[in-house]
Every structure is written in structure tokens, then in C-alpha cells.
Length: 241
View 1: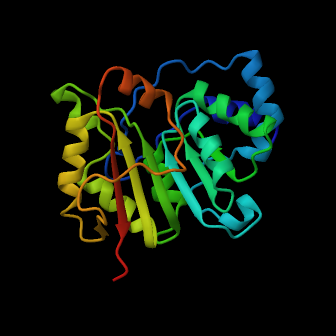
View 2: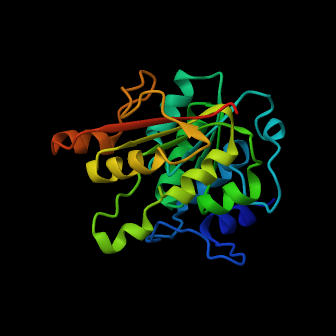
View 3: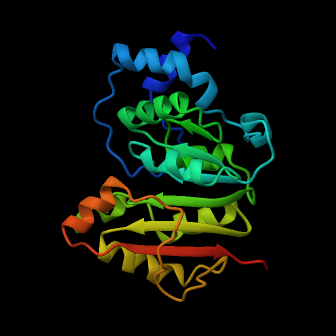
């Protein structure tokens, strides 16, 4: 793949639609690649990025090892992703993000710091999960501070719904987990409520989970705390049966 193909592929977001409309919970804004972005893509994409393909990923080929895979959906600027990967080197991480600035920022961070257990893709998460991620193959999902789409008429754009939670559960290994953190209390209560109806998952805490020691504080979390928003954590595990 040439540098030009990499730059064009990262800049262009394509939504693959089948018979049902693809779930898309974001609105694209800036999509312009600057000269600095081009330099970062040319220098680090081949080692830390990958393109969409309409076939299952070979994790061992992607990472060069057989470590368990954790997927982060919507990593933002990627600071938390990089720090988490350094704290837990025994896991491989796949980061999915559509926003160009965040994608390029994390790519540079991974390259400069030689963080070798993270690979990232700029594409719609549902398409990546449905076309590239085999069922029963993922150790965990991280969803940190997803857009709460606060207005009621926009709730349909929320990422976390009963159907999407079930979809994630089908991708998990037995004993794998879904870990969501949000500072929007109504959203947290909603997800906690409908998660109890998902037969593939159980909640070992019976309610909100305590903070996890290895998760760094995000910028969204800091802003939420400054606004006196409660930070709610949800931890669900794939049943063995």
C-alpha cells in the first residue's frame, strides 16, 4: 500500500450498508488532512494502523502474538488508550475512531512511544465489528464516555442500546467483559436497566461497578467531575453457558 493510498483511505469514511441501515451514532465534522497529518500517517500508519476489510481479522498476524484482544470503541484523542495499553501489556488493543484529529493524535503517540500492543482503524465501529471481528473472539470492550446525545429526540443516536449490547455480547469470549463509563447519569441508568435483560451477560456487582485501578482518568471525566457530574461505571461479563 502506497503512502497516497493510506492517506486517501484514512481521509475517506465509507459506510458499508447491507439490507439494514448501518448504525451510526456520530456526525462527521472536520475531515481535512494537514501536511502534519500526512507526515504522521506516512511515518506510523504501517506499524500501528490498519484499513477496513470485508473479511475477518487475523489477530495473530495483526499483532504478531496470540495475546487476548480488547476493543475500544470511540477512543477520542487516544491518551487513555495509550496509557491503558502501557499499564496492561499482556493484552492487545484495537481502537476504533471516526474523528480524524483523534485518530492521527493517537497514531503519533503510539509511534513516538513505541507502544506495540495497539492497532487503530478510522471507520464506523459497527461495520468493523460486524465484518472484521469474529464471534466469540474478544476479551473485552471499552466504551469510555460515549456521546450521551442529551436531547430526547437525539437518543436514537446513542451507541449503547439493547440491540447493540447484545451484538457486543456475541463477539465476546466466555468470561469476557463490556466496560462502559459515563458522566451522564440518565444514560448510565438506562444502560444499567436494559443490561439486566440481556441473557448473554451478567452483572457481577448487581449495579454500578467500582472504579477499575488500571483505567486512567480521561479529559471527559475530569470535565464531568468539575461540573459535579457523577461518574458511573458499568461492568458486564459474558456468561459461561
